[in-house]
Image 1 (cartoon, rainbow, N blue to C red):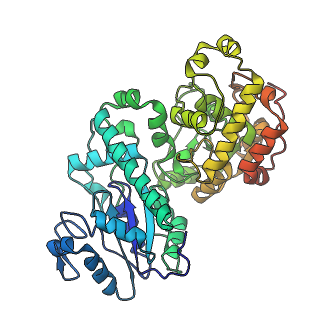
Image 2 (cartoon, rainbow, N blue to C red; image 1 turned 135 degrees about the vertical axis):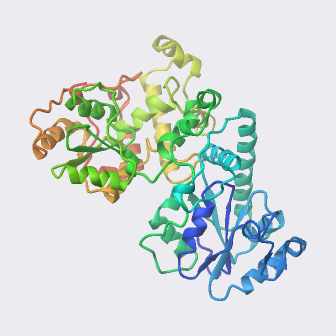
Image 3 (cartoon, helix red, strand yellow; image 1 turned 180 degrees about the horizontal axis):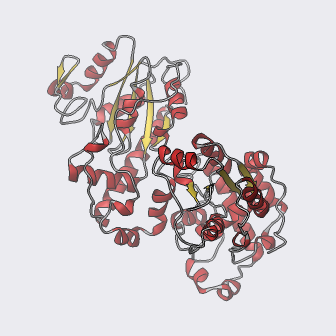
Amino acid sequence: MTETGTAPRYFVIYGVMRTGSNLLERKLAQFDGIACHGELFNAAFIGSANRDRFVGMTVAERDTDPIRFLERMVERSDRDLPGFRLFHDHDPRVLAHTIADPTCRKIVLRRPVLESYVSLKIARKTDQWLIGNVRARRSAKVVFDAAEFAAYRAATERFYADLKRRLQVSGQGAFDLTYDDVQSVEVLNGLARYLGCDTPLEGFEDTIQRQNPGPLSEKVENYDEMVAALGAAQVEPVLEETSGPLGGLKHFSASLTRPILYAAIPGGPNRAVRHWLNAMDDTDPESPLTRFENRKALSDWQVERPDHATFTIVRHPVARAYDVFERRILPGGARDFPVVRAYLRDVRGMQVPDDAVFAAGAEALSAAGYDAAAHGAAFGVFLDYLRANLNGQTPHRIDGRWAPQHRFVEGFSRVTPLTLVEQEERVVKAAAYLRTATGQDDIRNAALRNGRAAYRFPLAEIWSENVEALTRAVYGRDYLAFGFRTWQPDPEG
């Protein structure tokens, strides 16, 4: 990642609008020795709105000789490492120059394209591009336009693909960031080291606020139309898995009446646990649990319940990977991943019948010659894909349903200490412990024994030593951290 042997003279943040670049710039500016100058090559201004002169040069002079302007910025930077944001529609001469320049540190900032599209439409509608005080926030709902979004996505993906290609050809490296990474002090401390600052920060001053918090369903007027146009697979990951760091506050929920707090790892037995928590309150199994808008709300809940306990359940890596394979990767799930499925078929050679055959049911699969052995082989291809995906070697983001569980547990611990981390196979024993620890002697655990998944082929039919070995290669740290042994069939089915 670091350009060895070449001292940096400046840095560039490459991205598109509404990816969190303002927030990133404000946070980087809090490090000693780093100076951020905004959108220096925006066609309408220099650095920020209403500024038309910088380092003694006007917009016209900058546009006449952008490289001279860049060099003057570097020359006048004193001891700070200067940097700026460069978007897809800024001066292409500067893009080419900075990519080829080994003295330029490169930062590539991304955000899920649907989120940035909606955020951009809201900003244009409200004419509000950043806020320092939440009371100044202007809320608005926007209308999703399928054709407009398709063009926006194509342009965005084309920019990042071109950027990647140019960096590869030039032999230059870059520090990749996502919108969620900008929220992490650990990641930004790493970025600061990449830029040459060896003094880490313990936290940041909140100089600007997130403008459009909340799910997309609260921001888009024709949300159902958007889901129908894109498919839930493209909308849902934005809703559920990209609004914060792994293990963040959004994963916590609590019983309405009991002092028990649950930290849910995506891809785990969360429905059964939710039913169990609701059974304590004699409510409908699908009733919403207590959620927390911020850390203070959680702290208040804990103060009011000094005997509370916080727990999470980890699922065996083989079972968790197989669950997401069955429910999300193969067709037929309510919210599957057709893009990933097509990639597995076309690029990685996964041999599975067409979607229509899956939709027709077991008899159609059998007629197509698709049996447990073929299903196990397809699952093996998916496990190979997971290993590549978690190493950043696929075109797809890491989804929370297959992200390593230890990362969630580490994230949970940054929110609040966990009383108990237990394997799914021992979930009833965990419930008994929680019942004793919190003095809730009337709790019954039947709900935890229900809701076993029904798959096309039971995991026991397709499991093999090869499957186990592939899974260990993907989730070795989870095996070690949580004491998982070789997967065994559940005696209760």
